[in-house]
Image: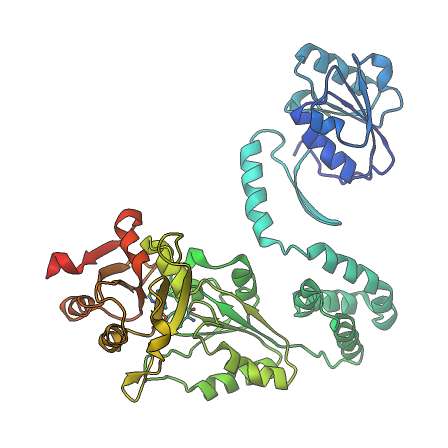
Length: 465
Ligand code: SAH
């Protein structure tokens, strides 16, 4: 290792930057963030540098300018000048960075991930800046945006913890448990309960009760393709001690949880529930009261035809902390992957998500409210009632030629898009044995599928009739 990452306190230190172009600008932003007293000397300056509040002199740099500097950053295109200045700095033991020239620098700027006071520095000693930047982006996505706030909160608790917990071991194990706990999530959300819960945990620790707080994450897993998960969904899934999932959730998503988590299938098929909704609600509640972190993975979005609210009722009543993570709902996922915009300036000014679920053999819907030809209709759970839906839409006045798409297993590698009209679409279902999950889209926007489709298989009713 040729470069040891040290974190410099630059507040009010004299830092000289030579050059005021694009490259200098990038370094200046960090130097100003670190509250350095920055002087810039350059023959000319990028207007964005001129706009910064710092001491800028437009003239040639002289050796005398180095005196008093703690750090010098050189960002000019004049290689001979860069080298001469770097050597002079080294002789005077002034820290020097020549941008993109690690060989003549004594310090280099790492790639930085910043969450207030919490920072991570990555560096490849100047060998592969693109690789370093790539990893910075990857790591950046995994680090909660509010981590700095959590760090500050923990900092404020240190004296109290020291007072209540006598031994170093006890304190370390308390901090380790706390960092892993639900308290971090409360902090990210800005919850007013944070301090109170922290204090209760600390007291329980001091009196050796070892209280552990359970929590529930109701996570939208999207329509199929695992890449449609959100960062938050992955982060919370990886915190879970127990994962409850159902049939619509892709096994590759379930696999993203910790290896040592417990996995419980609570699968649902139409009218053949493995566990009843009440049993699922109870199970979630029991696990959380036992101090476990429960991830409840639901297909699509938990609050769209997902019975998400029912699973939360008991938790609200019993004051168990929970979070709801939105997911990409089948309508958005399937429509995007099928190249069917749900709204369009020329064809549809609104979109409606409707359940096609049957009650006593017919859809529970007021069809007269579905007549607007400039509104796209998206039916969830409508495959079994497709025929009835089309007949009712025609019967209450919608044009029989209105385009319809069935999207089977949308966003997965087995996706197939069937298109036809209100009159013709049903023939495809038996012919191709279309299976659930399938989404139905009705409206002129379906006509755009032929032009905008960009993946997957598609079958048109006209071609097969
Ligand atoms: N909460 C889910 C919907 C659950 S209802 C969401 O927001 O997407 C289940 C219905 O969603 C299925 O009957 C089907 O109509 C639709 N669906 C879910 N995933 C789908 C997929 N990958 N392809 C097509 N339809 C899907």
